[in-house]
Image (cartoon, rainbow, N blue to C red; front, side, top):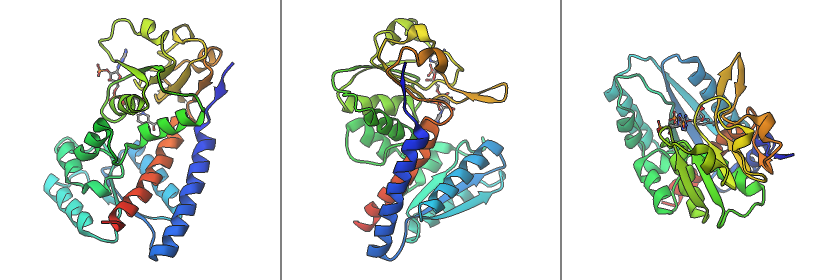
Length: 283
Ligand code: NAP
């Protein structure tokens, strides 16, 4: 029977810490971190994500601005907005909600964000920092995952870790962060032929695929730590990539879906906004 790693509870603690730091920042600098979120188009899922981010910012005492743009905006117009925000000393974090409409090159847009304002940690220089093991802004979901892993008190050094999924925003950076903590890391993906065999050896298992309940109890090593990043809608319910009910009988620690990685992503975004503020102030 597992211990449940509650992202809901842990994220509350982090958000309270962020709020305290914002109060200190306000006393010291007479201003608060300001996050600007740009949403292009009307996608309801994206709108609900940005609304949650905005609400969390305000609750933490930060300033938040949502810039909504029509999906007909041109790439040049969007780049011009980012240029203005880069030069605005009152803005400390810039987040462009992805995906963008097809006529806009996402990489070009991300590359245009000043790296010290890149709260999502997607700018190539921040990506490079993760791979080089240097200081930079960590992408929010991997950062939240590492905070959850550390909260268990389980030593990562020397452990065998399997990350299923190799996306640039989750799988690859999580693998690099685990490597930095001296875990022995394997990355599996859609062409991996022996996932079950690899999973059964994993002390740490991170599933970031987007396939409902693909990791079943018979794939989990007794006593493993299981982090379920997946968010899948099945019959109007959210389920993870891990079959939670079965897996919790084998894992020592496991994250639920919902209430696991999701809330930690937002809490990590708030931490990143504070970090960006402090980095800009110290320039
Ligand atoms: P993604 O870009 O679609 O990447 C999915 C990865 O899974 C790919 O590397 C793919 O392999 C691999 N994959 C697909 N089918 C597989 C299979 N049968 N066996 C093994 N690997 C397989 O997804 P993502 O952006 O990383 O997100 C992954 C999941 O996490 C999604 O459910 C997403 O909604 C969720 N997510 C949650 C949060 C949160 O805050 N809770 C944040 C981000 C993402 P290939 O590379 O070979 O195609």
